Image (cartoon, rainbow, N blue to C red; front, side, top):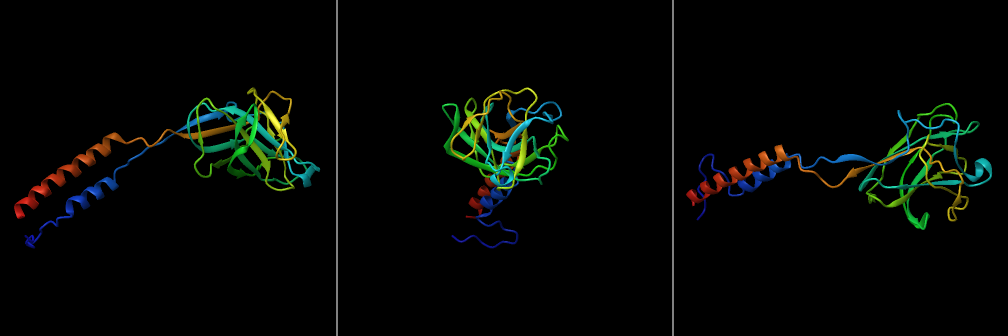
Length: 232
């Protein structure tokens, strides 16, 4: 039978509509940012007068890319990258492109590389020990705890002459490339300065408010269903 249109009558679709509205206002996730790897010292410090050159052919006559090996300390999707990056004296600030490479027998795996983002230094080499170049990672880039990766910096154009400052104490392998293909040991067992963070795990329900609103939605749906049966 058709439901009579009493003043103030509730439509049959109301329970679903009300539930959708209530759920829409539930804060359903709260993700925690965690450190994947960090070579920065206290106060985001690093060595001010020692670093690895990231340069384009037009700046110094040779291409130089820098790769720093690290082991992920947690799993998640990369969120941010902070670099202790400065520009060389006598040159203007130049942008670098940053990539995450997989590891292949202790070297960057050219076949598995992901663009993370770009950044441009604002401080001159030798004038600071804590100026950072920071950016949010583009897209979804997962890492797995305990897995080796390489953070690779490349000049964004031929005129770049930047220095990726060395960390104070963090040690691991650093490799260079002059052709964006072959990698060789740099010879310095000190990593450059950087920090990588990730969104740890997946969505985490906000238990208190979500549970309360869902309970209200269920109660409203139950009462309205009873009302509908009476009207039928």
